[in-house]
Length: 331
Image (tube, rainbow, N blue to C red; front, side, top):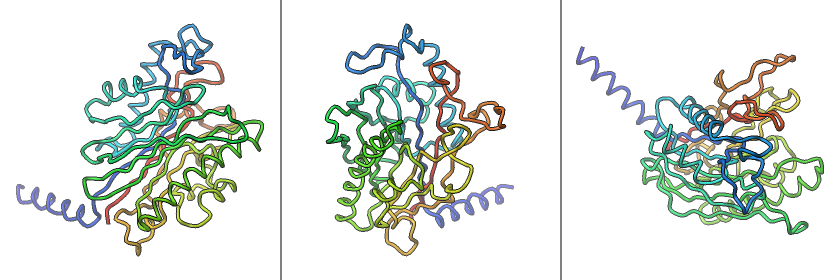
């Protein structure tokens, strides 16, 4: 019996060595993770106890617990290396998440209050046992045609994975689609150009650089503007391309799912011949759809993400988006 145990342990170790060290990432738009306190610098009045959404301490605590449940449910056996979050108000809600239901995982926080009018930002939780940040910057998104335009900054973090693999992580929540489609498209294009310029600079310094971009792009993988602005020269690959033409997605509008949330990597990471130190693939990239994350079927027998609000009305769910996970493997 003991000999059998050691044989299984040795076999597991050998298989792990063959496939290399693995690093698990998540991107998740958590739909308006606001605290219950007034921020005089931002327009958050609707998310106050006496605001239009009647946002209370009980509702906040339930949402934090539900988000933690999603994170644990998406990877029950090991913590994520890093988690990119969209639509968080400040570091206080992140502290409540990491020091509360996620405390045992020891996640640390990278966050910055951006100039977004509503006060929502992107942030990153990371596992310090696997990821060591080297430098972090937040890039503002400007739109020359409208100098009053304010949106969330783009998070950039250069880091080391287990002190071996250098990686460039970019987390973005691009401007939303509005009825004035042309204007909102141009604003997203401005954000994509900032991301592309950053990636070009990184690749100029190192043609085999490991780049991981994630977040809510507010457009599908086959969107022409997006592909022209970010993917046109073949240096970056969208791991969500496998969902083009399928009924699957991360966000559902009028009964149609679309992949608004993305993982994009430097193309050398998907090429087995290239000398990048990390490998990415579409096989390990998945939309998380645990049953309790979805609402009851509607009249069309479609299950939407179990959202916190339906319009202005409290619905009691987790988020109107589904998270995406992917695994990077050392070569």
